Image (cartoon, rainbow, N blue to C red; front, side, top):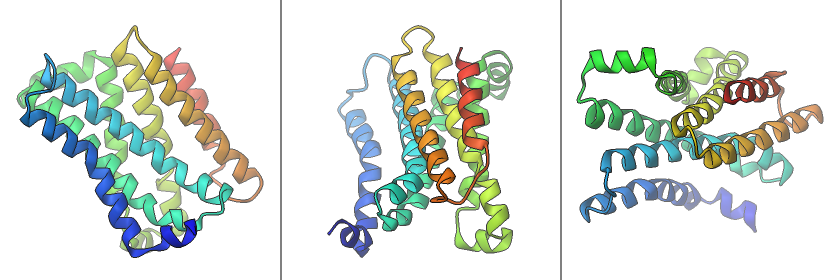
Length: 218
């Protein structure tokens, strides 16, 4: 029954609608003036959280569809990836507009001196080529092998997102460590499925990202 539901034409509509719920909730809370004592910080944290969550959901698609035998899940990977870029764009725009008021000098100073800003910007820039080349046309232009090679950047995006969050919160690191643990499990699962020949190989990228993330956090 589940594969049939996932293959339904309405399944993608439902996933699209659900993916907009965080934005709608944020907008509703804004209209009710229920964004806390610091609305800009609330919006920044919310959009940042959802960027990372959608990245992890995107990363979960390939191993999950193989382990659970749900091949139709692949239909949602592009959409979830684009929603991670969408919320990442809102996250960056909130900082640039409402926090810095488009003051380029102040922004560049932050990038140069505040490491969580630096790694966050790197993560967003790494998402750009993934979003641009997410269409079937770009797969044809690049060729399957080069396209897959480029889209290994998703590992860098996840690592940058986790480290960005960890360095931001400074003391209460519980949530960043939860995200790091989830990312580690997903990457280990993907590596396991690759070793069994269930997923087209990405070589040693996943373990390398786990190691690099651990080193950066500690």
